[in-house]
Image (cartoon, rainbow, N blue to C red):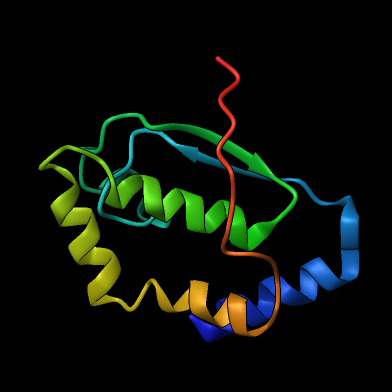
Amino acid sequence: MELMADSGKAICDHFGKKITFLNVLRKMSVDCDCSGTSAAPPVIPDIGMLASTDILAIDQASIDLVYNLDDERKKDLIERIESREGLRQLSAMDELKMGNKKYELISID
């Protein structure tokens, strides 16, 4: 997870303020996108899309939305995240001062 944060920092440092981050929380499976057609079927309900110029804020908001779901189906995804130390990426990004963990969700519906 630290290497993912380091890689992200290098990209953010290179492009600076020219980056906008988009996270799509739709049809989520417990498997990585890289699993392709062999991934477990999606079980998490569609949560929505997020956009930000702050990489840490958008990732923190995304994880918070998953954890705060009022749906029993989230437990397998949370177990997968935690069993692979997935939250470490957020703390590593914070240590690298890649953004702010605080955010405000603004709905555009």
